Image (tube, rainbow, N blue to C red; front, side):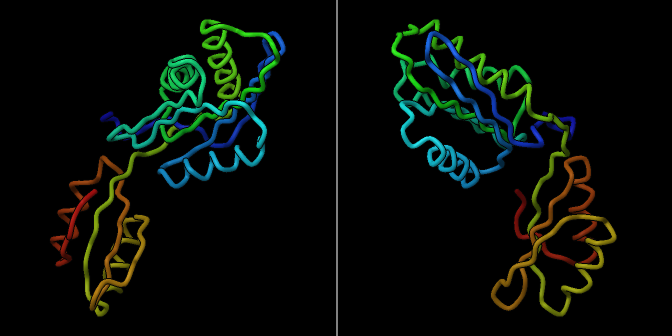
Length: 200
């Protein structure tokens, strides 16, 4: 992805799909890392402690895509993959969709399961508000406490989000930079005497 933008969902959403007695409850949510994914799934499991299956798929990291799909005991490829395919069809990232299944007594077969997980995911995504966001990259700057004020002034002037953390005898500062301005900001920081430790 090289446009500097990506599509994700702004809010959590929920939808229900029924087929021959089985009930599929789909939940979508915005996530950006593994800790948020784990928390999302934990919340769903607490909501549905007796559910037979909680299948899911996610995509994160717009620049370096990371994804996974999980069938949670359903036949291979019948649940997680259809969920993931719906996420991809809408070109969404930084998102997770989990579908809870309650068995209704009638076997749906693999084609029926694929259809049910696809439809429940589609309905949940229709309920979510999709938005475009700016891709950002991380730059880490190391500076002494005495120079932290100058760095803060520069970053505020550039309207860049940043987070300062103690680091040995100084501070390590994580700077979030919009992708189109990444190289420009790196050059500007070095020009102003700041040491860049690493980039993400």
